[in-house]
Image (cartoon, rainbow over all chains, first blue to last red; front, side):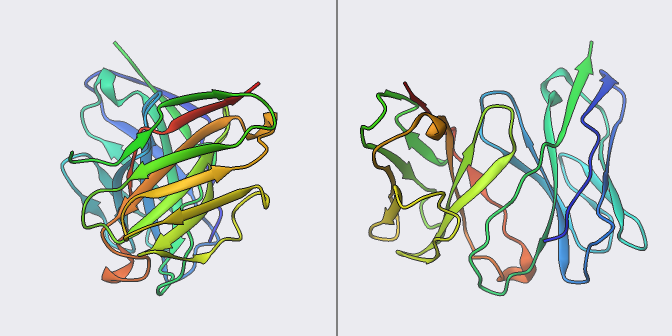
Length: 113
Length: 119
């Protein structure tokens, strides 16, 4: 699976949009971009994933560049409860294989009141 | 219960003792995963079950680690002769589909974890 690079930490004001970048310059054609987050003392939580097109759900939006070498997770109206470590993962469609998720250090997003 | 549950939530043991960690996945989920998260580190994948079988055990850090899943549901992770470096949070996750199906979509639902401390 391709490696990802994320900033170590970011601050965002409550009520503003939080934009979390992720670089995945070695991504290959069959690899998806997944985002998870982990609130302190809890297990990771799935947020969103995409392949080529931008995606939106009730939690966030995912913007993937045309060359797919980077993406941005957008939390449109951040709240204090969005303070967490956000993980960007690039993962291939394993075709029935056994690989799990590999999380790096992620971005520690701190929402400021 | 609607989510993945794990027990115990905390386990303190002495070096050299064996421990068993339990995971109850979401009912109907075919795939089950075990991960380990050491303090301040990212998630480390350990093992994956599809039904009762584990196609790949290579992520287990040593032969002191073993896991089984019975009846396609509950799974147990066993650590024999625990060492201090085994101290970590052990997380279990389940997903409805195995990897590779549904166009790569494989949302994993995580349990709250078991915090293991080896003294």
